[in-house]
Length: 93
Image (cartoon, rainbow, N blue to C red; front, side, top):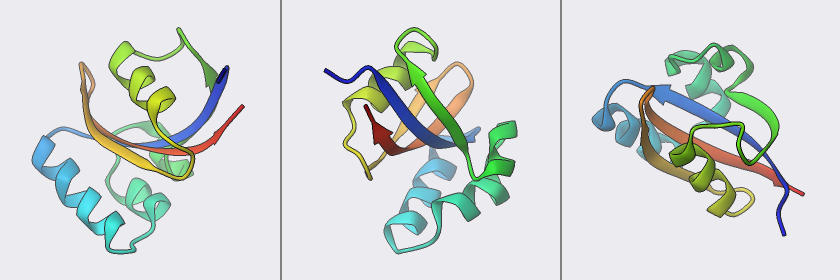
């Protein structure tokens, strides 16, 4: 059973922007560089890295997507009260 997830994310205001960034990631652009240039979250400066977290630490929609995703996968767009997220699953333990 997965107890912790290490993830990075990009937070933007619109679903269209999230889909645009996802297309760039899928075509080979760097998730971290796109996070630095586009994320509305302070974590963007670190390439979107959030570190390890357990259940109960993030908003439900974000947490469910992160725990359900596979290591190495980019999940999203995921809508929360903060906006639209693309979530890269870096590790699970």
